[in-house]
Image (tube, rainbow, N blue to C red; front, side, top):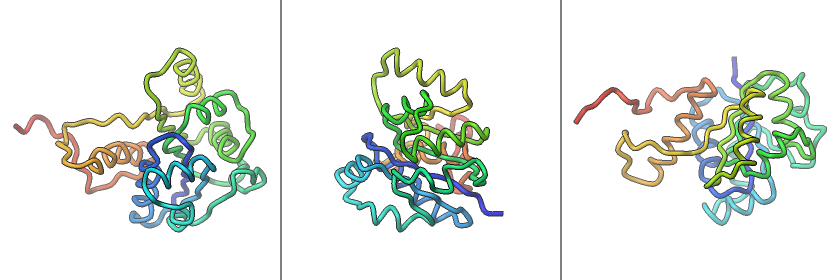
Length: 190
């Protein structure tokens, strides 16, 4: 059975996380990828990686305009296994927390929550103020997984991409699509 995953890319800095997630899902095979890219996400993707919206769409099976609230992924009857917003801006996170379904990204996340499926938000901001933390708490209480891309260093990263992949590896684990090639903590080796 094919896994179906929505990848949302918002305008927060860290577009490389969404890009890398798309690459990893595509290379894994057997995963149907649905892409939602905000206009600010398009701009940030280009500014930070040089990749265009068309490049991102090429890594997905389906992509949707942000305004298409009639898209199939806006309905609970569409069987989606998980949704990841990578990166997730504070604006997008706050709108999801408030149930303000003003665009397809937020509506799809709302559907994932109401259907009790996995919603993972790679919130990209620092530091957090109390309002951010309260929204994260509300989302966690609703069933979302808040997974800011905070790297570990036990895997001895050598490049920026090693650090990015560490966070993406954790997200793949969370959506139930672990990569068998991932180096995992196996106790102290030094």
